[in-house]
Structures are given as structure tokens and as C-alpha cells.
Image (tube, rainbow, N blue to C red):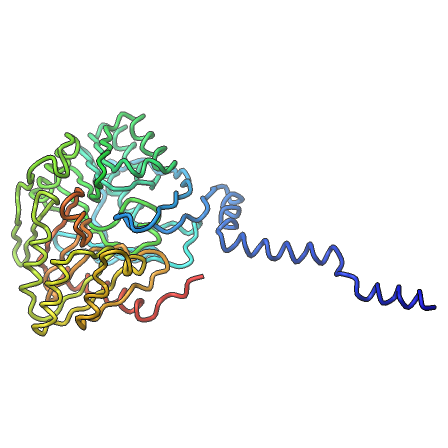
Length: 426
């Protein structure tokens, strides 16, 4: 009898059935797969379009953080190129991934990052808009970009080349270490497209596109999945041949290998006047971009709004502190991952009483924008750093236009609001 009782006690304390453990492991495994994006890839493959696993967020281009290699991107089949130029967008467009507005001589676009971002939802983004514009080119396409992993854009460049359009591309050599960038760059070269690869230690950090000597795209967005679908960015599309002449001269400079500190300023038309607006072009390191920014900050009378991915420039910070001290309202949102880095101006601005915050995007706030007195917008590839001023190849525009400034102010308020109530990141 004692033995039977012992056996019964043993059975009561036995571990759960094997099938229960298997079920628990399957549930935990499913949760892990979902959080890491593998279910997205599997579901896309079932639907007939395999999508990549989720990449790591983009990191500082000034070297503050290690850069993990992104995952390969899917090949995208595009419709045949149209025979005429793509019409300008509506006065206002909005998709899940992009917000855009049009005025008399420009369009402006802001990315709309979502969290969590999934590969299966990558539609309606800036890559589609750029590809459509490239498909409308009939003579020449010039592209300079720090990073390039967008198949839609590369496919559009190849289609342009195949229909007889002259195409040139300049990229920074560092990013060729990632497989998909190397593959897409090889695809361009195999089609006969000349690709200049900048191998300097400093960055070829430009982000611009020129179409048919008339249209210029410029702003903060690298042509990457991260910058198009995950990171906060802005891009301007400006129809102005004299501006295109400036950027074509810079493209010639890059393709000749005389960019960066190797040459002199190539700006053909420094300031372009419109009826109620003006536009100034500067290229670093040949043009004094930091001095120009400081001069505009010193002239500010009412308010300054700033979106800064990387901010280590003492002269620019001193000018903002000076504006604060003379009664100008100064607000700053900085990318959180760079706010505590070496030389960051976050703490000096905060100590000076400036309304400065880290951003609330779970990925990257990648803008490099200053808005002054609701009238002037400063934007481009130029981070507010010494390396951007002295070493990198960069471009920047200063646009005086009240309507454009209003659009950038709206975007600033959205990003500022998210900084006040950050997205809850998993």
C-alpha cells in the first residue's frame, strides 16, 4: 500500500505532457518570428512576392554608431515607361508613407514613418514618386546619393538608359559593403550606366536628382528603404533650369573625381529670384555653408525651428543661443541616438534655456532643416557638423518662400508633437 501511495504521489508531481511543452514552444516561437518580421516575409512569399526581413534602423553617417548591414531587397517589376513626361502631382497628396504638396514652382514631400514598419507594406513611398519622375525623362538623368538600395529607383534608371536617356550615377563607396547596394550598383554598371564611386575617407553625402536639365530633387533622404519608409525625411522637387545648371555642374565635378576638397565652388547661379521668393544654392566644402546658416540665424527676429539628425557645430549652436538671448523663440528636435554623442550640442542648447528635445520616432529623425521667421527654409544633405562643413561633399538650399516655410513648419510641429509624446517602441 505504501508503494502505491508513493507511485500516486510521483504521478501527481510529474512534469507536463510533452505535447503541452511543444505547444508552448510553438507559441513562443511564433511570437519571436512576428516581432522580427519573418512572418511578413513568409506571408509575402505565399502571395508570390518574397519580401526581406526587417532591416536595422539607419545610423549616424558621422560614425557615432556601428552600422548593421541591411537585408536584401526584393526585385520589383515596373510598368513600361511612359512616352511623355509624368504630370506634376496634385496640389496635395497623401499615402500611408508620404505626404506631398505642390506650389507654382516646387513640390515638397515628407516621409511618414510608421512603427512597426513591415516589408509587406512598402507602397506609396518616395521611391515610387522618384521612379515615376525618372520614367518621364527624355534626355538626361543625373543621380548623386550617399546610399542606394531601392530596386524601384534602380529599375527606373535602367529603363531610362535602355530607351536612350543619358544616365549618370555617383555614390559613396562605403555602402558597397552591403550586399544589396553592391548588387544594385552592379546592375547599373552592367547596363552601361557610368557610376562614380567616391572612395575618399570623407563622405560623398549628397542626395540629389536632376532630370532633363530642368528638374532638381534635393533634401535629406538617402535612396534607401530606411529613409523612405522608416525615417523622417524631406525632399524638394524644383522645376528651374538655372538651379539644374548648378546641380549639373556639381554632378560634372563628382564624375570627374574633383568633388569634396579637390576643387573649387561650381555654383553657376548662386541666388535665383522669383516673384515673391528666392533660392540660394551652396555646396560644401567649397561654399561657406556654416557661415551662411549663422548669418541667417543672426538675422532671425521672431522664431527658429530646427530638425537636426546630427548637431555638433559650435558656431551654429552659438548663433542659436544668441538668438534665444535676444528674445527669439528657438525650438529644436534632435535625433535621440545622436543627442548624447561626442560633441553633441544638445546639452549646451538645453543649458541655455532653448526648447530642445529628442525625437519620438522609433527609427531615425533624419532631417537637417532650419526654418526662420516662418519665411526661410534651410535644407539639404548638410548635417550641422564640422565634418559636413570641412570634409564631406554636401549640398544645401536656402529658400525664401512663405508658402514653403509654412509646409515645413507643419512638418516641424508634427515631429515636435511626437517628441512630446514619443511612439512606444517594442
